[in-house]
Image (tube, rainbow, N blue to C red):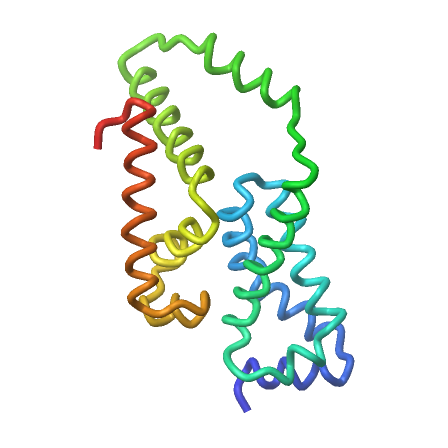
Length: 190
C-alpha cells in the first residue's frame, strides 16, 4: 500500500492526524494555484482553506473517485475559483484604501542611484506582469500557470482541465500572446 493509499485509509477511519498530513502535503500546491487564480494573498488563503474544508466534509465521496488525488484536488480548486468568480460578478467590490496606497506609492517613488533605478524598474515590470496576468481570462491563466509554474506536460494539463492536448496547446499559445500584448500596451517592449 502506497503512502497516499495509507493516508486515505487512515482518513476513512476518522484519523484526524491523517487529514493534517494531507493538508501539510498539498497546502503549498493548492495555495500556489489559488494565488495564481485569485491574484492576491487574502483570497488565495480563503480559497485554500475552502478547498480543504470541502475535502474534510466530503472526504468519503472524494476517496471513492478514480484518478490521482492531486488531480482531484487541483480540479476542485479550479472549480471553487470558478464558483467564486461567478458569485463575485454579482457583487463587485474593491478597496479604496488599497487603491489610494498603490497610486501614492507609484507616484512618489524616486530612485536615488542607478542601482535603485534598476530595482524600481524591475519591480514596476513585475507589477505590470502581475496585472497583465490577472487580466487574462481564467481558462488561459490556469493553463499558463500549469505549464510555466507547475511545469506539467500537455497531457497532464489536458487531464486536469478536461481539454484535449491540442486545445491546451492552443490556449497556452493564446495566453502567451495576450500577456505579451498587455505588456506592450503597458510600455514594455517584448
